Length: 277
Image 1 (cartoon, rainbow, N blue to C red):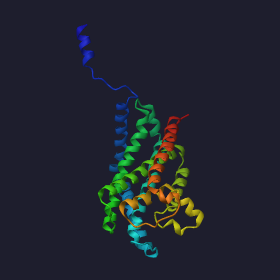
Image 2 (image 1 turned 45 degrees about the vertical axis):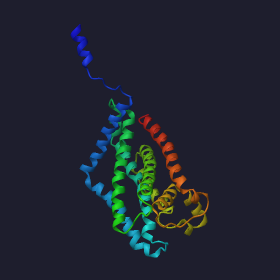
Image 3 (image 1 turned 90 degrees about the vertical axis):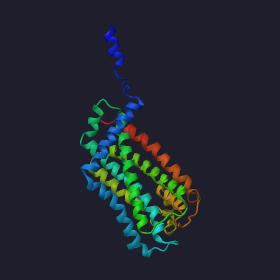
Image 4 (image 1 turned 180 degrees about the horizontal axis):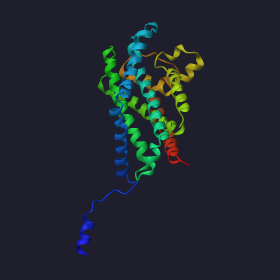
């Protein structure tokens, strides 16, 4: 009786399913699984890093000569490229989630004795790490083509924080869309629509050059708010807009991502819980 009691007392304690420790360990396992694609498919990673640099060179040197912006078009363009790259991450997240659903990987995870939250958290962590790497690569590219920040390291880090906050919001939108559209047609349609949404902002041109109704729509685009705020924090040239949205760009650059995360995070969790019904 004494020996049995001793054996039970030495048995390691395991956090029961549903606890925070259990969920975090499972989420990290899923993160490592998602990051494993970098090793198995390095070309996907390299293309993902090179594409924003290619866009920067195209807009900066092929089209930039036709756009007159005080302070130089490259410095005007670069914060826009950073924000648009964060928005384009939506496609990466949505495609990966949709493929996991189509291939039955998500159902397999759901059948395992693991935290239900781990699948979504693991995807979120993996994509945010990928976004940080992409952001650093684009920053190096920007420095090589002559872009600089002018207001010191603190405001520059704040600008990078706003960019990652925008990516985090679009990440949850991507997860929700990936769970919603299981067919390739729906995924392709969303991928196409991301482009006009990104162009309907101040990322590439001042919105004052747009027709009045388009300017009104662009003023409240979340990308517009982040681009205007990061240009201000970096000290890069901008074209001052008019109206409440232009005067409160920094506030909107925080509020928009928080609202989007709350809405689409809740929708993604609900959609994930209802898979298979």
